[in-house]
Image (cartoon, rainbow, N blue to C red; front, side, top):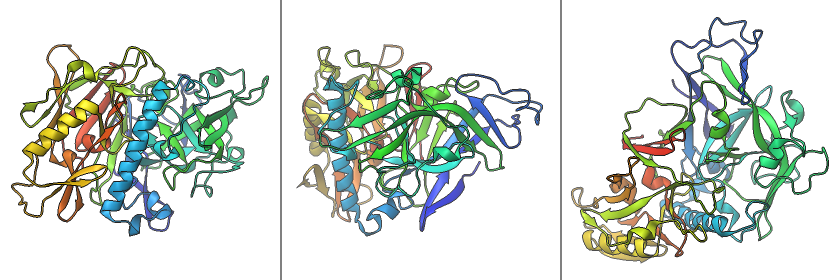
Length: 487
């Protein structure tokens, strides 16, 4: 099924979420509403169809913030930025996000109002998609983020909204399905960072605050999220819990209206969809490489996709900080080419005392982030194997490839060895040349791996995941992958 194109601003092309239904599925005309509470539609709601098949797969398209069609392109200087400037900006965001993640794990206040000196740009992710919210549906562009559990939108009355998104806040007064959560509602006590000034049965407020003064705050609410098919049918899912943000001082991904979190917590969109009959708690995506063609967009699925993936690694939780919304995996070693690096196996473990360290898969971090011994070992071996002069270009390590040919420019693979689901032999997550180097200029390429502070969380970012079909099987607690071409 092809995607439906909409335009949010002159020259900005955004793809609407589509729903893929099995061929035998019949759905009623108009908008069928399912509930995250698990209730089957009433007889009246189903009166226009003889049968509803609840085995559903939702398909959407993601656009990277640096893609020419990104909503950020109309709200920033994309069209006047060079490739090297965009890469440098991606590095700054990746470093800030890695630091932000590490502080989230270590900061004991994160169960309430989270204080962090990290730049606000670290929050939100690198990809955008379209969603429709309310009854009748209102259309928005949001970032999607595996490192967040929040589902959040700018809302009216908007005291202060995301930069460049104030013209499109969600209007609760125009939706018949909007319902605020009260202070006594279970959603209020479960919602991250909520209840800072709740009184009696009043509306449940939330605040997400940063040490340097920026914040996002608003009301916890319930609403219907709609997924639309190209044939005109639509599919509404009621009682989605989300943050209705009314005061936003963060400078996030330009041109977007909020965030859809894909993390493992109960408030993320996959967690909420999993309670709807027929949905399976699995999501997957296939990311195009950094700097992919303008005609290409990354694909994303909620539900069980058609896949031949057989390589999986277990998802681990941080037992010291179990509430953190990250997909931890257990790395047992790293190889460059055929050389297994001399890194102690326990170096990759999560600290049992403070929860620091460990490794996560994260779609919202562009580059791959390694700490201490791991980064030094990878860099030393890579430089020794890659037969081109190294160039210092902080924070990158780059190479002069002016003398390269098509047969010599590609480096050896970098391989993360991960724990298998059987607990026996390890499985390999392979970074091929497209995952290892990016083109900085006509004659310079740079390594897609950066160094972060010792003890920090290591991150396998979206550049490393590009051209892999990634499956987050939350039912069985595992992440799977297969090398492919995502363009």
